[in-house]
Amino acid sequence: MTCDPAKDFEGRFFGALKCQQIGAVGFSAVRGSPLDVYRGKRHIGQVSDAVYLVKIQVEGESLIQHCGREAHLRPGDFTLCLSSEPYELHFADNYFQVVLAVPEVLMEDCVSQPTQHIGVRMDSRVGANGLFTKFVTSISNCLDSMDGVLAQRLEANVIDLLVTTLGYAEESHKHDLLNIGVKREYLQRIKYFIRKNLQEEQLGPEWIASAHRISTRYLHMLFETESVSVSRYIQSLRLENCRAALADSAFADYSVSEIAYYWGFKDASHFSRAFKTEFGQTPARLRKDSQMSGDQELILATK
Image (cartoon, rainbow, N blue to C red; front, side, top):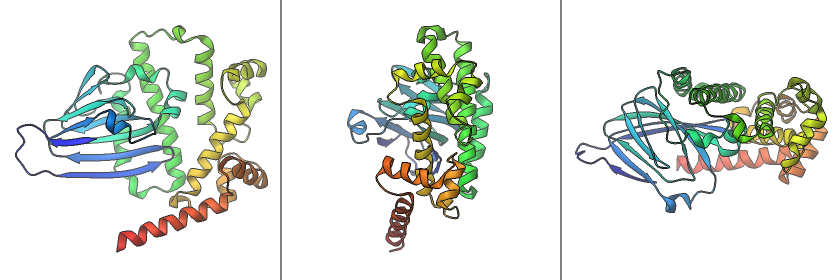
């Protein structure tokens, strides 16, 4: 992106940025003086990963222009931006924003048609919007003191509250869920259910079908449009969470087996084989490589 001092601003520029990864979700706390931010196609071409950016206004005000819409945010408001689409941010005064970076796949698994919320002001006085922004802001104030397990649990709570908040907004604007089809709606709900219950050992086709009052045959039929089966989808999500934990220094005190069990794997040998098949290296090797990389970064930072 390109950042320029706001028009008519003649003071001394200042800015502060604090970032922390909580599971799959990135947290950023951004403070600065009046600023104009531009993200265009040339910037987008430099970054391959598409993420939804949940921009929460904590202090000051901002004007966000995205996908032909404008959102004028006041403290407590928030909006969604998609990193793969151009946008502009304008801060006329000193400001403080908390930004969540939610992977596109995760957002689309959990939220019905998230693109409909892009560039729309989510008023803090409406529905659960204010509750969501207060909760996320409170988390951003204590990022440095969180261990890995707490961070993973808070990630689930943040996503859950975001889903509830956007779901209420969708109902209030009378969007007709039937337009996306009953099967798609069912599949989305099931994917969200799976992500929320990854740590449960009993998570499987029978348990999922029973929880949604459908047959296992219908469940498998819903996944026919996907590139993976239900069981494979569950395993892939678990493996991805295990890989993130093994590479995270916050989980350094947890053994490989403990991490595997935490994410629902019942057998350590099966986990190790599945992990190597998925990522091309053993869990222990990935952890060791991550630690070596972290040590090298620390050495460079102290020079």
